[in-house]
Each structure stands twice: as C-alpha cells, then as structure tokens.
Length: 118
Image 1 (tube, one colour):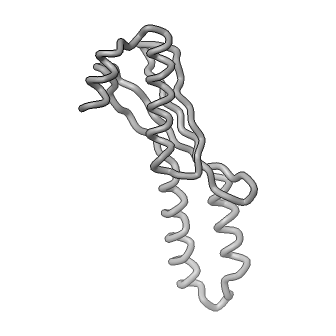
Image 2 (cartoon, rainbow, N blue to C red):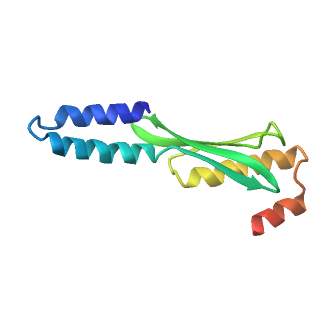
Image 3 (tube, rainbow, N blue to C red):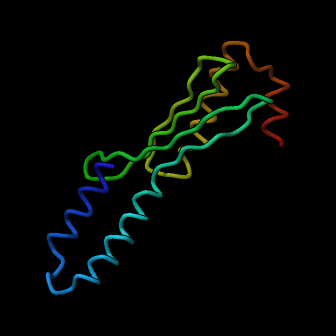
C-alpha cells in the first residue's frame, strides 16, 4: 500500500486545483491499478489446498513482484520467487514449491509428471 500512497500523493501535487472532478477520476483510476498489483489466491496441488500471494515492491525505482506459495495442513514448505514479471512470478513460485516438495519426498516423480501434464 505504500506504493499507492506515493503515487496518489504525486498525482495530487501535480494536479491543478481547479480540476477537482478530474483529480477524483485520476485518483480512482490510479488506485484501482495499484490495488490490482496484489494477489491473494487459493489453488489446489495434488489434492491439497494451497495459498498463493503476489506482492509488488520497488527496487532501484523499478517494480518487482515477490511470490509465495504454501499448503497449510500438508507441509511447512514455502515456495518463493522474485521477478519483474507479475505473471511470471506465479510459475516460478509454483516450480520452487514443487522442487522443494520433491526433494523432501512429498511428491513422487510420477505425481509431478501427472501434475505438469494436466
């Protein structure tokens, strides 16, 4: 949310004072774009309910995305990835989770292949 406050503040500084209605429309559009950067979802992996989050962060004045995936009630393993691509971070995070689960023996080679082909 810090990013949204910064962007809205910058827009407020440069918006003309006599354009109150225009400012409100710009603020609403900017706020809806910023809110869309965060994702909190549930997904299923091999019959287990898992949670998945994506959060943006700034690094050297560029937006990056950090993804996390975990399956409460099944394992304490957490898949994590960081990238500049909002859509790409989901795949990298899931791949990291599956790789860690495979290394711990929670997923067999056959199960991994079936999941990947579906």
